[in-house]
Length: 364
Image 1: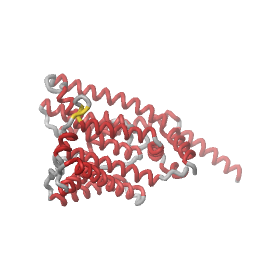
Image 2 (image 1 turned 180 degrees about the vertical axis):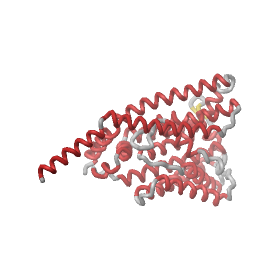
Image 3 (image 1 turned 90 degrees about the vertical axis):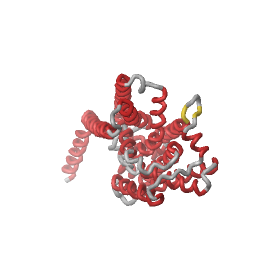
Image 4 (image 1 turned 135 degrees about the vertical axis):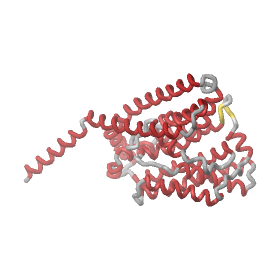
């Protein structure tokens, strides 16, 4: 089957299954989440007017969101296919550990060593993503189980390699320029790099055949197989991209914290998945956007910053983010059900069945 015909059929699949729903949900939820974010900022600004609404705090929020945003790009692609990747935090740790060991063996100095570290970290992440994708697409193991397993595997191997002790082998020039450097009128380099990844992810998802097929697979994987789309390959590549993003986030984390963070990523998967879902990407598949993910990720970061400033224990962040996540999934389910009822989809299927039954009776 020709590529052009596949694209037309994929477009029809997305249009018929989810496109009108996607347009309504993304507009509604994007507006709602921006309002919620503004409300949170206003509350914290009123409670701590001298500390929260400051340039320093805004800069901290943006920097802290940057690494999550890189992870969010890959996680958005996975969730659009109705999958899940719980291993991103552990893959980040493993990739940073391997990169630190390689850079340490090279002397941990100079841009050449730093570039090798970037390639190693990204490659390690992609390898974990390939394993996840293969098990999900080919072995037909549920994504939740696969990525829960690789979460433990990646973290365990990182601890084996380091003995549970964080490594600090990272070139100083890399830390100074990427971790703490500024470009473009005092904009953090880390944020600029993250923005580039987000833009590239948006183009891939919304402006390419790969993105269109990703939406189509999330909308109706079986129909995609019938029109000739290689669903298994699509799923594998989506998980590879998610793993590569986690690996790249690992080297950025290494530059920012100046060490691996073996014990500091326990909430990463929850934060990223929550941000993706809060931002409008449906856990049921076929709906989502990178822009919504970035907005959604700002909420847990802003909450953490605000809690620290007003003197509330940061542990409450997990509680509030969990509430947001459950609420977002619940509302998504309600809107999905309401949209299906409004479109009259179920009665339509029933009429087709009755007509087919009548034809069979006539033939009999």
